[in-house]
Every structure is written in C-alpha cells, then in structure tokens.
Length: 122
View (cartoon, rainbow, N blue to C red):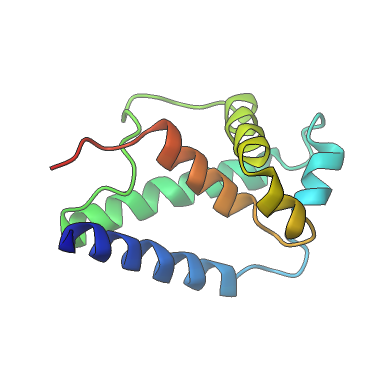
C-alpha cells in the first residue's frame, strides 16, 4: 500500500512538473485528432516517448520503482505510438473530450504505457 502511494505521488509530481514546462504551441488533443493521420506530430510524439523512457529509468535508478514495464528491446514506431495514444483517447473519451483543448498527449501516452506495459506486483 505504501509503495503504491509513493508511486502515485511520484507520477503526479513528475506529471505536474512536465506540464509546467510545456511550450504554448504544444498540440492539444483536438489539434492532434484533426491531424493524426499526417506525420505532423511524429517528432513531438517520439520526444514524449523518449521522455517517458528517460523518466522510467530515472525513477528506477533513484527509487527502484518502475512506472511501466515496456520491454527494453521494444522499439515503437510513430504509428505504434499513435495507436497507443488513440486507444487511450477512446478508452477515456469523456475525460479527453472535457479537456480537448489542453495539451494532454503526454498524459495520454503515459496512461497508455501504464495500461499496455504494467509491472508485476512486488
């Protein structure tokens, strides 16, 4: 129980930190959905993915906790990452519809990683 609470607290603090660093031109959910069939946001999405991998390594190094357990040898293409994000946007449609003008693609990717690459309970 304490481990889960620490994990949630770390994830929330990191999410808030990253949200405060977002530039004004970060795509909103609506921007992404309007142009998701293009490659306009591919570099941005790769950046989010790299940031998530770095974050996972940092938290593991500092606290021996993995946020998600994506296989280390798994390289996801932009198309794969978009599928994960799209699935998250559909699975939690009411939330993302409510905040569709907010830059929440990073949150969507994080939630998709948590859903698709859960860690075994210790």
